[in-house]
Length: 117
Image (cartoon, rainbow, N blue to C red; front, side, top):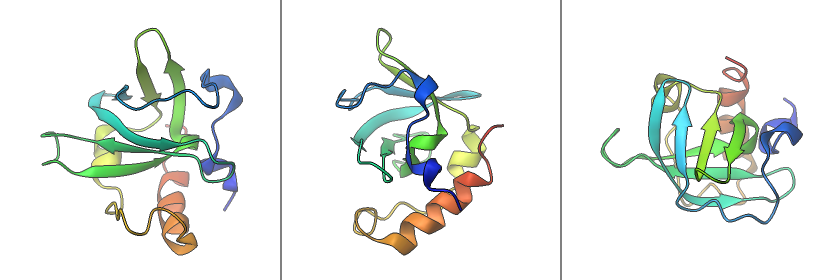
């Protein structure tokens, strides 16, 4: 598996260091929630999205490589995934998402197979 799933693509318009917390997140078929937390770390950049009532308050971990573009003016992040792909993603584990290579591999493998829809 390529580590590129854990890095922002150069075409997204994301500027490293920009705080994305609170930005709305848009799947290819509609809104899924807001950015609760994010990281720009090299080879482990991600978004933690609070889906609110959409999937019963679930949080999801989205690797930065799933981001299509960031609209700074609208404060929105667009991801190359459908709502169902996000809903069916591996369970977010707040205790494992930082520093657990196996967990990152599980998440990365899932999204690597769904990227570029």
